[in-house]
Image (tube, rainbow, N blue to C red; front, side):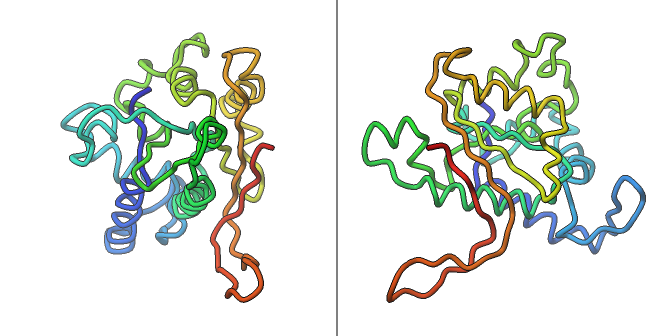
Length: 221
């Protein structure tokens, strides 16, 4: 549960995808050639995570040289592996901007104070892909997912693709169940947000230029 990944580290993953995907002729699970913007976490696990952690046999986060110690997550990420990693990163970049401020106890409890070095819990990078039974247990309440959500004080971000596939995945539904009932089940105030990749212009006010954004979110409250 202390294996959160930062925006800075996720940017490095995306840079790795952009650098290698076309030259190395990456293919998806159906054998179709991929473009960098099509690469999802199934592909990243195949071409980045597993090869990078083959020697260490540890999680991706633990194996990174930029990880100097425990990285407890401030937010728990609920998503499925099928969305493009580019879109996933866009969502978290926007979430980090939206939750930048931390001026009082209310903003602090609500997950404010985010920077590119604040960890998020993302299962693919946090779980040891060589020993998944360590984190995916028969009893979901004892799983790495539940422990990480508790470590994040129940603060949860759901990342949605255009089809809302996350709502058809049993683990994601369980995570959302915990997130929405977190006050009753875990004793934390409920803080939930949902983000999706969507290019648009943000109206920032009179006298300012519209801002081009890559994602949009709905936040609790």
